[in-house]
Amino acid sequence: MKRFVLFVSILCLSLSSSAFTQTGNDTLRNWEKGGMGALTFNQIGLFNWAAGGQSNITLIGNLNLFANRTWENSKWENTLDLAYGFIKNNFIFDPDARIAKAEDKIDFSSKYGMKGWNEKVSYSALLNFRSQFDYGRVSPLEDTYISRFMSPGYVVFAIGLDYKPKNALSIFVSPVSGKATFVTDDSLAATAAFGVNQIKENGDFYPGCRANSRVELGATVRVKYKDDIMENISLESQLELFSNYIDRPQNIDIRWNNAIVARVNKFITVNLFTDLIYDHDIKIGRVLSDGTPEFSINPEPIVDPATGLLTPGLPYWPGPNYSTDPTNVVQVQKKGPITQFKEIFGVGLAYKF
Image (cartoon, rainbow, N blue to C red):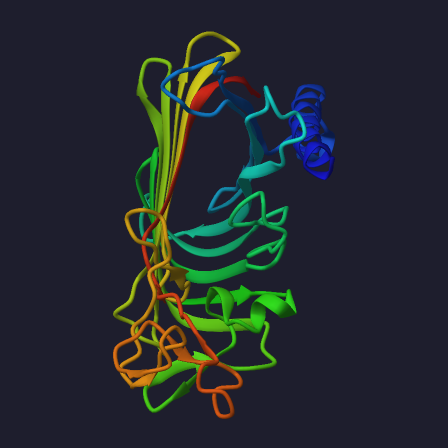
């Protein structure tokens, strides 16, 4: 029910924003404003299908708003991207099947620029906030969550130069930028989730304690392209790179978003959304090709709980009571940074205003 209310709220926001822009407002008369609301739908229905498979239904709502104002020597650009959606498997034969989150995004950016030495260059300041609405879980069958609102939450502030060789392309370079990562949920912060709560000892990083945020100082590069690449087909692409001067600057954080919208008619579109993320501070559990966890190998000899023999190279580590019970051992899953990728493709309803 909570997910349904959240989804409807985003849809209502889209409709109300459209009505607002059409009626106008004196305080916003000097602003260039608009946006697009989209509803993407996918369904697979299987009935007595011998080859196997699972019926599912997916519904995702997107709301993209912008408000820009231009003065003689400066410009202020604001964007707000909201998305939420869900997927329900086996809905035909099991109406009570649990709903899984398919999409969840809050992304607000504000950039103010003053004219530089020519028309294509401006001195700019950028503020970006990203988070999500709802709890995130590895599986809809599990109650344990791995993310929620403001866990994580990201705030980026950067000062630099913005180069616009043409209206569709913007290249923002900041040698001075700050990135703050927030994990307000104490249970997630205690595990050093999303890179917070880390301490450095002898050149290595370990989970620390009592920290719900992490601040990094570094350099940011953001490249944004938005244009119609073909008739009735639009592309919006944004690549963001960040290097932390203080901590392992050679590890570049990457975030690359793409949205391709092909308009069939005034209301029906074919949509493709992709997100690619690489963040060295986000540790993800490794799995084998069959989907089972990949466990670390302990280099020290340890008692095999199955045989009671002291055996080196086992995928076991000392448990909390190992000092009194040598068979009290645990398996530790390998974790590390890895490229994250998400793709959403479907037919939807869209309204541009």
